[in-house]
Image (cartoon, rainbow, N blue to C red; front, side, top):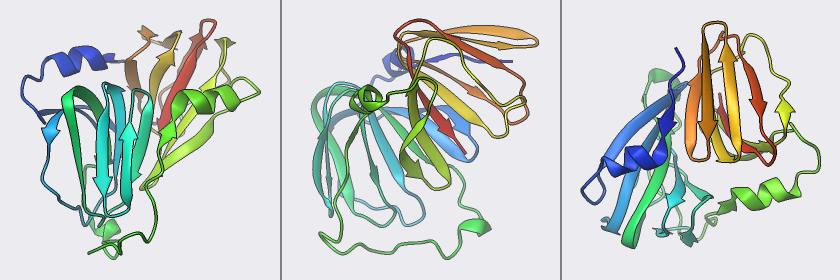
Length: 218
């Protein structure tokens, strides 16, 4: 059964600064919505990267690898072991992607500390990437967290898809609208909504004019 998640509605259920709600699972990547208001203490994660994707408002993301300011539709990854904190003077809604399981397969991939200025945080503006894409239906990878790719594409009409789906995947609507059809279900998605298709699921995807998608896939 397909399930539709509206990010605005999920965020509206959170009434405390830095309250968080898990809304989806793509492979072993948990997709959460949290409220950034105020500023967190410095901390680091030894076992997993974190992807910060701003949905509404503006946040500052400070780290040992520099500071970036993220606005709606922008994201950045803080690698494992890099000290960081997020903050915002006003309420901001943020999607957070991170590994939900610390299993034996990840042993040996810890990072205990980061060398200051060894690298820089790299913000990505999803809409600007979409504007550079010449051909429709061609997904471009803009970020990678663990073994999972975050990709963007645009197009109108029926999309070419693998039938059945070779991997778990999430579709998020950046602009426009989409319809996902399975043998037993049909789901309409609009801007700010997402759904997850499980590995092995048979589906068809179609979109209206001006539609841009984010695909998160293992």
